[in-house]
Amino acid sequence: MQLAHDRPSHLLIWITRGQGRMLFDGLRRGLGAHNALWIPAGSLFALDLGRQAIGQAVIIPDGTPLRLPEIPRHLRIRDVQVQSELTTLIETAQRELQQARPLHQDALEAHAALMSVWLRRQIMLEEHIPDPRNAAGRLAKRFCDLIPNHYRSGAPMADYAQGLGVTPTHLTRTLKTATGRSAAELLTERSLFEARRLLTETDQPAQNIARHLGFGSAAYFTRFIQQHTGMTPGKLRRAGV
Image (cartoon, rainbow, N blue to C red):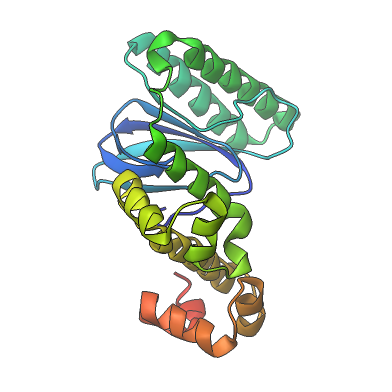
């Protein structure tokens, strides 16, 4: 998950040990034990966890009738009882999924509903109200929110800057400060993540993938993949990484 990307489903990540860093909601942040991340479908993020980090992830399909938070949230949970509540909910859902007993889908939906209640209860607490963003933080978030819906267009970073009413230099400097990546690097990472996913998880020809991702030609797509992975699209597909 080190490359910036978004996913079609909602994601709840519960870190129980270790540390790391993340790109989340347009900002670079530290991540530690007993941190919960709520990542709505279509939200740009990246995780870089240390080797000792341990956590759990819950995937909830988009479009579910559950009442779920609509914006990304990073919660640092200090109350031991509250930590235990979420761990128990996730582990119980995992057992239900593994056992596949009758009505297990109904049970999983019920467990997901309880996780939603847990999330919304924590979000309501004053200690979890996010700090106000400054102008740079707001700009970084606006740019990161644009990427999931527009990265396939092939538009250069300068077009994004124009749409946001700033210069390319200002956008690059702001994103580097807020996220640790330049605006162009974020666009590259999102395209690279999707290219790798399509090459390793589908049998679509490389030229179709290139067209889908807004590359001008299959040759340019091949150079892009070689530059960032050291492999041709065909070799990357065969390696399955």
